[in-house]
Length: 88
View 1 (cartoon, helix red, strand yellow):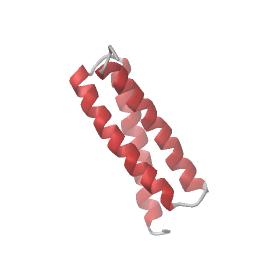
View 2: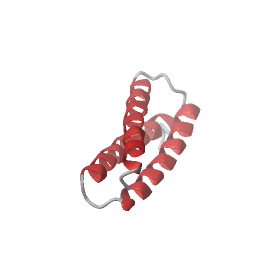
View 3: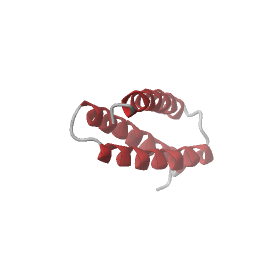
View 4: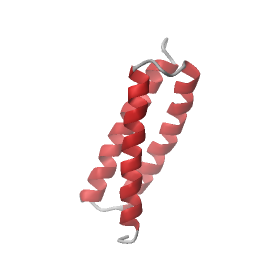
């Protein structure tokens, strides 16, 4: 697991950057409903992968960072849902 730590760290950082950028685009109204639905599907896949990754690690710093990213991805999913399905 020690060998995986640098790769996981990079994944966590890139996920945070992409999620924050997507949230900015969503809040600025720069995505169409179709684009938002596609981003939501991708975010749901990412959340599933991160949940699986979280299960591999015992409680600790790595799991805490993964859990923080899962919460950020959840925020993206909710924002995409609001844009992609405005009537729901």
